[in-house]
Image (cartoon, rainbow, N blue to C red; front, side, top):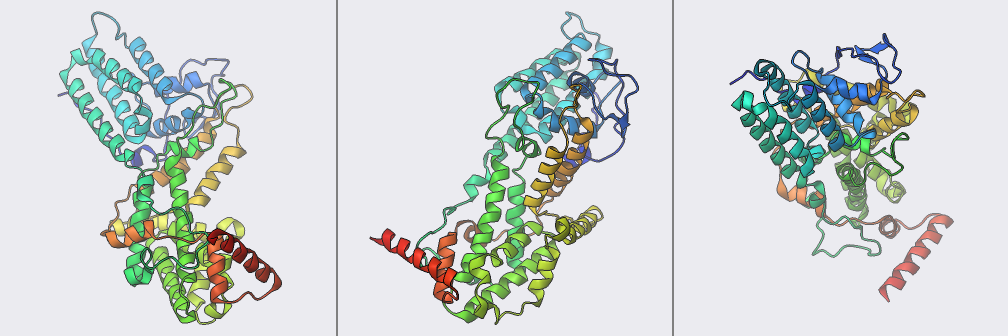
Length: 470
């Protein structure tokens, strides 16, 4: 069998480094000797960037370039069309449409083509959901297969791996989320459908582990392309219709999970009728949050802090008076939004550094505060144009985008070292939660309204509750 290039993991693909692109003839008015960034053009026409992606007998694009371009290209061209163009260029440049092929030449080119296809299908499997994309793959590999039967076998393995990935991704997180609809106007959920969390899990470290398990499981479903597609409207040089729709489901489901956890924390605190029990639940969640911080699970940490800071919870002054709050204030300080979350970003860098030098999966865990990550990527996208005035793609912008997304992709690939406890994760996914109105009702019943605003709100909520009951 012909020696194949090494299959790169996704983390390999996004390692920063010199991109070392070849320099094709300038096209579309491009100037020779244009400024470079890490060996890559800071801008170029879309045609030129596609050319850079296409392997040749004596050239293979750098892994960082492949990831950056495949990630960003969907802003300008649909993945199916990009693949069609890449395959067409391969056929044209290698003269694969001739009756007789140059076998020596194809044997130099073939492994590089298969390597590109392997990296593309591994990192962006959803680009291959359409049957037409699979047809392009089979066609181009079918043309080189007569030169070496190993190519056909490699293609079969590649497609098998792709189908397995797509099948796994098909089991999306939507199926994991149970009772997503909050309880609006019910003072307490019936005992038959609700047990308090502390009766399911009373150990903060165990709960932090189970939250981390859920976070990593959900992150697995988020493809790197979703970060770009979340901000796609349309390419001004393309047609007037938007390029994509409904392609950020996993990203949105993950944000919903964060919101659910916030409301679950608030619900668990507001539900007990006795002050001592409410204080106990608050102290429990403070300990869970601290364990999440130690693990590197910043998303669950922020959700717990956000839940405890919701008005129906924070107004419970008599309850908080019974809580040892020193640990809570330390955690709040770590996640303080002041200075664009300066303290959190320092802690995240520390966790990221620990992850790079880690010897165990436990030390590799980095789960960023997801909403802030999306916000950072959004402002990067909004702050720089996709195209320059001359129509060139602003590749410098997309190198920075790929760096941020690539780091996240590396973190989400960490295998969870904690054993799953199905009873705890099921509860976290399905336990009924109060809506905001429901939380206020429970809060006012626990500790009476203290001022006129609260009294008016309570009266309004009770009137609406009475109307619902009739």
